[in-house]
Length: 98
Image (cartoon, rainbow, N blue to C red; front, side, top):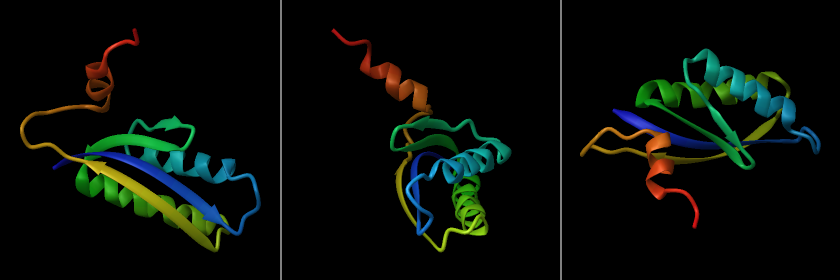
């Protein structure tokens, strides 16, 4: 099953700047074959369910390896069975403003 994912991973106990941890998670997602789209409060990516969930787990593992004692993540997941749809399709369906 294909899934669209929005992941917001927040390492706790590492200080104020979390950029290196976000970058590491982006690297994990790319290495897993995804094309992550970073935005101000998270990352969107899409693919097969099992691979996506494995990548989320690997993001957690990598960030823990970097020294984060705790991680809080939020996920938004979307699936469809009536047709194929990509993240770009969802954005395009809204159209351009005014």
